[in-house]
Length: 106
Image (cartoon, rainbow, N blue to C red; front, side, top):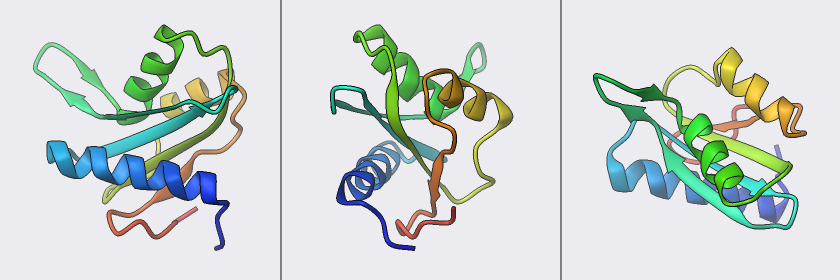
């Protein structure tokens, strides 16, 4: 699968976030103006959020009204139904999923 350079950038950002925090998931999103946001999953006893949910929340709280792309890097299963729903609500019909090595899986 050949990716657009901007989608490769999202995977790189998601991989870097995941590696930096030693997290199970890393995600990155690009908003309608081209700004990017990266995040990892949150696994606290009182709060659990996927990396996609955190990245989307960061984008929205920074003023994004729509997204152009969402990427998830994980060695586990792909995005959850909730991840897909939040991406779709902001205009992204499918999440780009890659393994820890950056190779796209879907």
